[in-house]
Length: 444
Ligand code: PLP
Picture (spheres, rainbow, N blue to C red):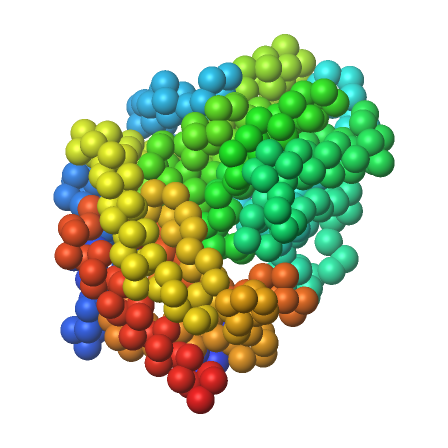
């Protein structure tokens, strides 16, 4: 029996002992190319000197000061940095320790906002099917991923789910981007009206869907239409950028590519790039002022809000990205990786779709390319691929298909922004070997 309560109780894990650029090295000296940043976290790889020095310096100066007594320079500076670059209208930042906490804070901020402005009946949340917004109970209830929810039902009530903007499986034959996005916006509007427009608090979505669908970007115009629907009924728009944010898609915030602003945005993962655990909830001036002029107190909090060392790490990460112009590099490397994936797997009999933005790319595996029928989830193809990739020195992030066949197994790639061109070839070669060996194991 392991003394560490690992997530999987039946698996044994190699012991990671060192990091070197985009590689993790285990206690047997084996090197793993990190092509998924763990879970889209390690955007600067595993040995970024600038960040390591910033952490060391902050720990020496002041590791932590509880936020009910003090603010700190790293926290103030990081907030300033983020707001200076955030989508229009987002004016303040609430710091937490990770993605689920950021989503919980977003939900409670939305609730408190409506209480402060005298609309406490607005409690209902609409999210999308097959979404993931975190594992704490509120965030889990928000997500529409049945596999993650199954063992914990009944979850918190007051959440309904509409269709995701998942063109590969949800778009009808012959439907244009415009028709598809109009239909989805109409579905959202119908759901708001069904619930009663003044009962609905917020619509929650990821701009580019990460873990549950494998780097699925929206079709052009989708978020503009969603924004219009939300505005028509006074519903807040919460965008979860925990995975797709902080430069991963080639812009600091993924929503920048949609031409709209949300009311609340959550970020985490790439914010601290794994050097420290940190997340944040960015809030519009409208919400901030309602709370400021109302009770003046956000009824929420965690011990590690605005942890000084975590903020110092995140500030160093974000400054490094900016100083080294890594967002341009993400776009360039992303285009290179996508081109290589298309060249290698574009005609693969079991890869139905290749998609994504920047260094956030996904491949969907199917039993049959023409019918798009997924593999039987009981085969656990994704897990076999992960094992084969690790055996071959590659970290990638595969995820299982759904029982109803509405999504196939997929592989998510989210490598560090500091790769060199030759790493792209290494990713594709190793992935090819892993997929080939996994398919042989699963299909014979
Ligand atoms: N939201 C999204 C979109 C995520 O992808 C995740 C994690 O994968 C979370 C929230 C939860 O973040 P954390 O695991 O840091 O709690």
